[in-house]
Image (cartoon, rainbow, N blue to C red; front, side):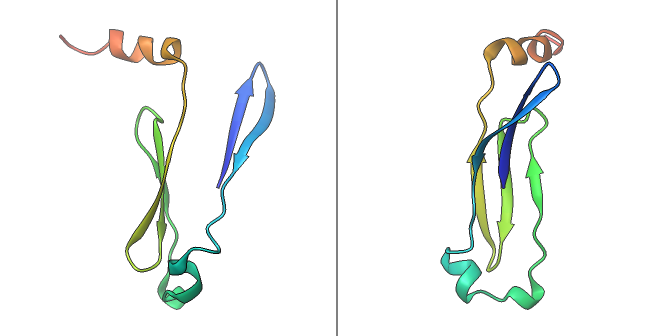
Length: 76
């Protein structure tokens, strides 16, 4: 999983996360493994499914100013 940052047309890699060494990947049932990557609607967290019903959870950092427009439009 790679985290990217973009600003004014520039894209930069922030971090790379691999899970090949985790127990579920080395000893799990890979024949039936179907990886899925999901984020929540506000992009605060990313979740990757791993074999054996395991999850890799990665919190994402955002500036509060990026979230303010969303919260301002919520019904009171």
